[in-house]
Image (cartoon, rainbow, N blue to C red; front, side):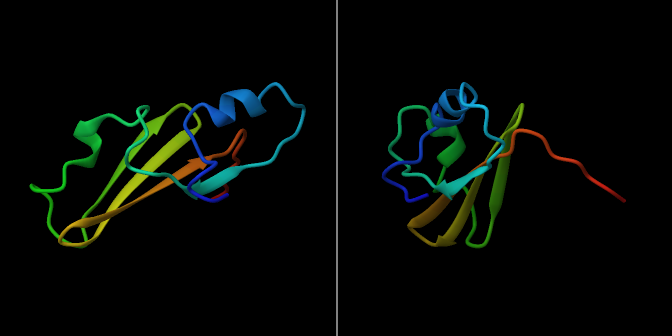
Length: 83
C-alpha cells in the first residue's frame, strides 16, 4: 500500500472482512495515531531502527539520513513461525 492510504486503524477495519490478507506499507510520520516519542529523530543515530509491537501490528521506524526517517507498518492476522 502507499503511504497516503496506510493508517493504523486500517487493519481493524479489515478484520470485519473475512479475508486473510496482510497489510504492509509506508506510513506518513505526521499521522496522529503515531506517538511522537516513537519518532525521536535527534537522539537517534543514522542506521538506527526501532520496532514497536502491538498485538498483530508492527511499526518499524528506521533513520536513513540525518533528517530523514522511514516508517513502515506491518499487519498480519495470523502468522505461523516454524523453526
